[in-house]
Image 1 (cartoon, rainbow, N blue to C red):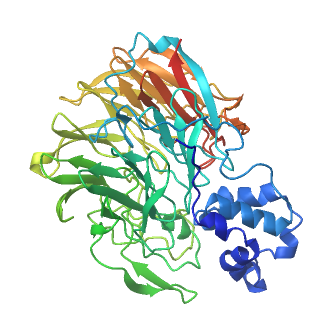
Image 2 (tube, rainbow, N blue to C red):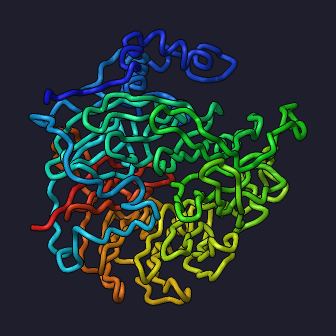
Image 3 (cartoon, rainbow, N blue to C red):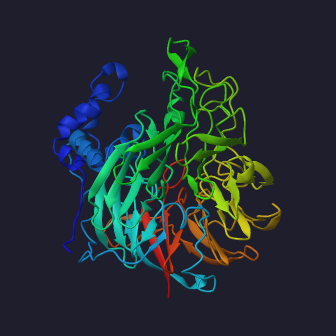
Length: 577
């Protein structure tokens, strides 16, 4: 088969960068009243500096609504300077051929299976784990974060990137079969069926691509709110794709001139063949309405919030989909926020809600002494759920940013069976992105990234909620201790029979014995790597997605240039010598 590289129509749009700048940027930068720098003043900067501002700097919210091709075009237009390479990162490292798909789906989306337990029962053993060696490294172009969970199927790695490029790579060598340019950054994992791959972007677009060639099958924008995005990985069940919606608006509310807040989280079911919406259910049923005026005369809105940050979990036996929600943005706090919700698979109707933290209304920057009118009368602790629910042995397990892990009964409207206090909890504390479970224990990684004692890994008996063991933070693999260099386990963890893989904010990945938590393997990612595609790449803080384990290999992203983390842009693949 002839090798095919697929780019979206945005590549054509970017051929007229002046029109793109006028459409996306001039409304602010051509108006002196906005105090935004003019085109002339920005022209002295480097194209790389402008690109960085759009990717991870002051303009990251606006940049998130652009593709990698568009961001490059704008940066080059503003500065009049050309950048090296291209947005797709395919100057080197192409596969010689693109053979027909073969083999099975090994790690599908957020987890190997739809239970979201992140448990990989075959392919790698605890006895083999100490023999893992780096096999290849892949560099993400125009990125300060390696933030998308890899998926593994048909002998390939499917992974999105900060600049919106989605890659199909050979699982053994890392060479590139095809690329696709999405309209926004892609931080979701790719969900896979026998013929297609599905993912969402930071502009709330959802895509279906031909798994063999990367050809676009359909695309659907599932939310029109300007701050909305898809961060949680979509989940597949039969002919339905379940897509969670989250939002930047929590950060937008920090601006006292912003009319806060109007976003509501939702779960959307799409037809996998056509992309048509089968149903869409808002976490907060009541539409936002004016609730008053700020001192500057700005209209304030509500209720709002309830973002779904993580992957939904399919329970085919009960005919429901579980999703975990975030905090309210405005008061009064809604009972469907900071909760686990069961949605009917066929209709999207909420069948039950189990709230973990009531009265949690929060926007960024609200603290004692702040006069921002967008701040709730009572600011909550920001204890939303970043973990997806895990359905194991007919029980729901989930970790929360409060530092509390829960076991819930799906037969009794999510009744709490036990609670386990693992961390102190905070806005970036507790369990951030993902816990894991085998058939015996639940494993809770503690972030507490802003606290005095970040990190630590807990193994908890899933029947009783009692601690089995605790692994304290290891010695730091990075430099001087600080927010970007500490032992926080903010990234999702993964488990195989006999070993738990946990990657840290200090830039190291460690495998712990499931018997006692002892470290049996460790790799330090804090360095530059020679990459198969020739992109300059390095490791850094590890947050967000965790290790994907399949076919005797471990795949891990390193670098997370947000929330004070140290940037990086590399995908690493480990195999047994």
